[in-house]
Image 1 (cartoon, rainbow, N blue to C red):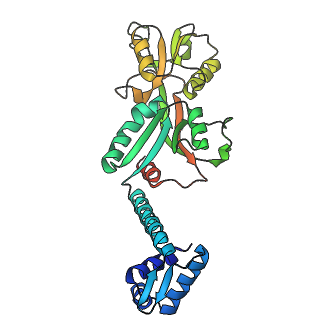
Image 2: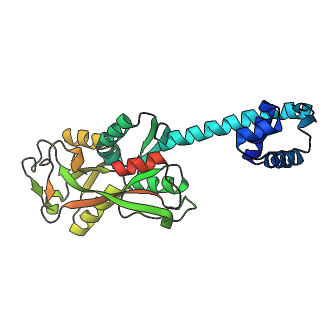
Image 3: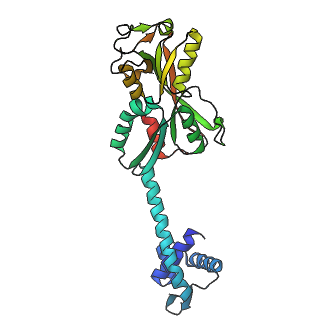
Length: 292
């Protein structure tokens, strides 16, 4: 059914006269009559009784009027809701990322965004880069913060080519050591310094762990991985307790000079924001990307 036909029907019902309804709608009387005729043809019932004094709703018209008024009111509510989304007065945004992103990089941005757009609800998941890839591809997340390069998902039906990848932040992984460690007063380290040393690392399968493992293999050293953890705070606590040395993001350190840098070549990684390229981003997602 055409919305204009429904609006015409309600106007005739309110005015009780074809000519007055036509004036209200800024249409000719034949145009109003044609719209009503098409609507009655569609519903299969006569909606008005034509009397010498005007238009009177039939029994079918009285029943139909209730539903038309409710339907048009809901459509108006829908338009208001869309306007609120565009104006960022309401809506939601789901973001997934690793420990560095969710603990250190995103909170200041989320705080500023929330201050400007208090009606937006946030869902933030701390998870691996691979899980974020899968969740963005499946539509569970609007945005993902991942370490490059990314791998295709075996879980999602959507191919990786459906992802938009925007490089975001360059990070450096630095070595932290226990207080009594031989390198505790150093500012740099060589991979040979870690030969046969106990290490507290991120869990196997994570993007950061893959970077560290690659560098260890390239250095041709043997290390003793005594503990694997998921959280940055847990790694820092275990290192402080003397269990072993570990690697964390520079953003997880209090001062820029904290942590030991690799003498040969800093351990760097590029972090990116990903989202589906074949789907329209919500106003909240677009605004958040701009703020990032």
